[in-house]
Amino acid sequence: MSARPRLAALLAAVTAFAAVLVPSASAHTAPKVPRTAVLDGTRLQQTRIRLDHGDPRLRGALGDLTERADAWLDQGPWTVVDKPRPAPGGDVHDYLSQAPYWWPTQPRTADNPWGCPYEQRDGQRNPEVDTGTDRQDVEKVFDSTYDLALAWYYTGRKQYAQKAAQVLRTWFLDPATRMNPELDHGQFIPCRYDGRAIGIIDFSQSYTGVLDAIAVLNTGAPGWSEADRSGMHDWNVAFRTWLTDGSFGKEEGAAENNHGTFYDMQLAALAYATGDEALARRTVLDARARRIDPQIAADGSQPQELARTRSWHYSTFDLVAYTRLAAIGRHVGVDLWSYRGPEGQSLVKAVDFLLPAATGAGAWPYPELEFHRYAASDVVHAAADAGDARARKAVRLLEAPPGGDLWALRPAAEQLDSIAG
Image (tube, rainbow, N blue to C red; front, side, top):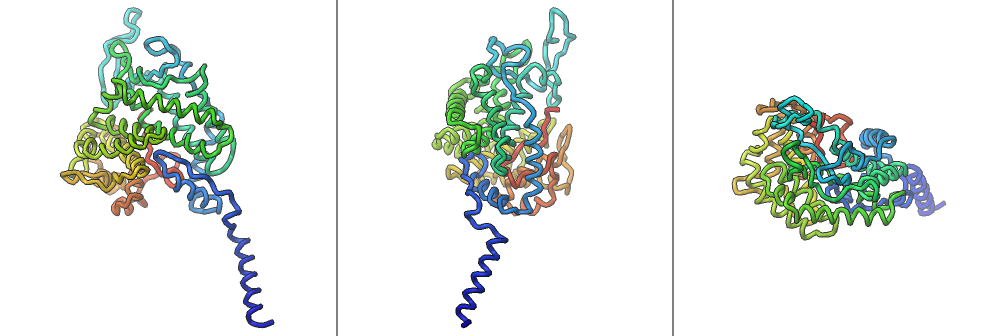
């Protein structure tokens, strides 16, 4: 055999051997890119492909995610109509929650069943807020649909998608059990207010996870129909309109602390998810002078949050909103991470301000009733991904949150230190 035929035979053998070890691009159906609002859909697709090819670096995170998803399979679905008594006004389809830091001051009697008047104790959660309202159930709706949709996308197991669809239909779409698309009775205070603008944060702190879950399911999930897709779009348009046009939405949007940041983030995400990219872009752009300049100091601290009894929690919490808002900005051509205010204010400085406590290198010198170092882990990940050199060095020193570090599979900041307990 001449040299040329031998070379051809050798190349053919190498190609055949490689095909056994490394699947070809056609060996797997390429997953669709979800049009997510906060998460990077292209990144999700690339992660899915890595999982399809058996990337061992993702096994631990996938195990943590599927463990969470499995736990939801025999829970719910939940509905807004099953609370013991309806919201003020009497419509069982209205969402109801109670202000968490307000407490009765008098013994409950037949003439004063609530123990009014109520007084505020900042950072101290009244356990009665978790009974008789929709707050805990709606958080389960948010968390479960997010976990289940992502677990389906990464594994292809249809039971995850079908469960997520059931949860969403029950809470938002089915006429008998659906929630009205407004928050007129969020964080009411007995004997004082039937609802307050700050109740909007019940949704804004987590609802973007639902928007992203819907986008993931929209890529072709079993059990998720075109009617479901259209129904959720209409619900989200109605909710967005309530936020922009109603008095509560306008009041919450004017807040100068984490409430205002989360309002902007929620509005930008809803706008993007429902097709109004101009509103999404304008909201992110306005956040530079409207949020970063007055709310972040030159040294990176957040004075309004440091004044709280839970200063570590609220400093990291506010940055969850900022980093998600920056992620939405990526979709509409706005780089919020590169912005510098007139005194040097920036998201990078705000995250770097937390790094000593986040890595365990130093104590947190401000008031905090219950310090959890892992509360900062996601926002540090976000800064590292955005190019912050100090955050990149800090990543290996972060404390993993309960349930594992899922950043590799859902690279968008979550509130990791719940104060619901």
